[in-house]
Image (cartoon, rainbow, N blue to C red; front, side, top):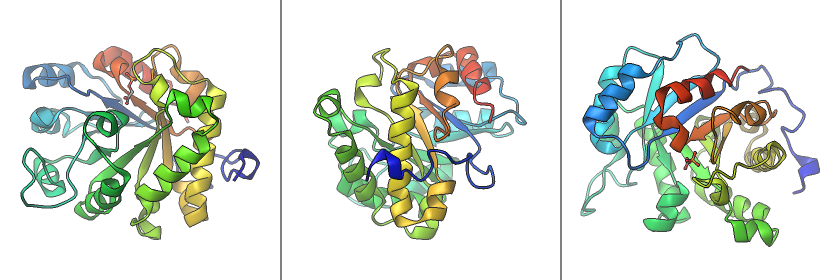
Length: 266
Ligand code: PGA
């Protein structure tokens, strides 16, 4: 597949404009329960604003965020989950445990989990259907390393990650998955991808989804992540295939995060 065959490159945001932007703040290892409560009180998001919005606190602060944000338009995502619902998996939590707390979704396959916690595409194949079945919206993270980009292996990497992770997701559920393109070289480095790089990679990912279902390719939301900040969000978010952002460091300031959300007007 080449960029010339991309499904979404020239298309509007979904055939009927249905791909509402989504901006999600990934707190990573930040947020005691007290910090989470304070953050939620300071976060000001207009429920009728330009984008869907979510935050990803650590497990221990999920219920605080659900309680504080429950009446707002802000969704609450966990940062990981195990694929099994129960068993001898010390330290893990299941999809049902997250829905019981009131979580709306879960980030899966973040590159930091792939790097430091042995997250595999094989496990993700089980995690995605488990999350969907439990009623959680999964955000699947994919992306190439700096070496892979330099060796011109970006498409090969994205193809294997996307195809493997989505393999057991039924065709009629593909559009319920959110995909985040997060080049590893851009995460936490301040080295944001150019709008052209983000657009090309995300259009390529959309084409990969299109190999399974053209309808799903038009409907699936694909985000960019990696050093998104209030002052660079707009140029990335206006790209036709970029449906939002997964924001790490810059999401820890609720005012800055709200400015990134404001940049997401469709
Ligand atoms: P960053 O992280 O915005 O701090 O680069 C993004 C992410 O890891 O999701």
